[in-house]
Length: 359
Ligand code: DP6
Image (cartoon, rainbow, N blue to C red):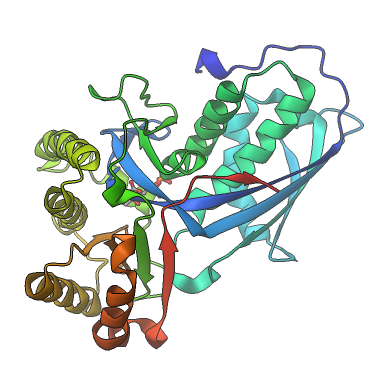
């Protein structure tokens, strides 16, 4: 039990009401891959918080006649009751009830929807858990109005982490860091923090076009992938590399050095997938069209010198990252060279955002 986020009030008044948050997805530049316990990361990760890919979550709450031993809730996803998601959420609520005991006195109705299509291969766990955790924190704030804004968001990130590790980073924008490390003194393994260095203008409004190579569900979940890092032959080296890449990336974000940025971001993406390909059992999530796109990006960069690069999450889709000033030329490049490798030619234009909004 983490004592900082323990809820101390014992006399909980009956509360009822409604809370709503819109929370974005995020894309890691330094990857979280490998964890112990409940989402304690093996290395620090750093991400861009997105903007157009988000979850809207509304939580209606009313007092139960008698406290329950489990959290009572119903989940409606895009207007329809989703019992299969409720099973996953049960685990989440069980974990967070220790820190949010007031939930056991309430009946919740959760209504959620995503801005991106459900079957797009875009993981919704980061946006979904962060939006829900922020709504839970609204309930806490209603019961205990004394909590500070810092505590509110840190605990929201802490709760999100208990749902899905990467979700902890969605609470802060435009960049967030999660996991203890030597450079960011406020960083923690338990929750993410906002990146507070002075970001060079080159990275303001950075673009992320998500190229939808494969919209199917991946056959190995991230949770299984993380667990395979425990006995991985390259695990120790990977942790050293992640730390080194974090230093390099941080320097480039401050200095505006786009070449270093490109090289660190692509190294991280390829290392993530190299870890999957060399784990035991091994597996591959990228598809032939992922490689086609990567080669197109490398040719384009070589021929034009535009600082366009890619990253990947645990799937086949490509996140194409580039400065805003190159938007028009990159959109032309996507139409001419990349969209033909996307399922139904589909892609989603997104960009770095400032984090969640209350609805
Ligand atoms: C490859 O956060 O989805 O996207 O903590 O088990 O829910 P769990 O895993 P998850 O892992 C995401 C891994 C990644 C890299 C990253 O986002 O840092």
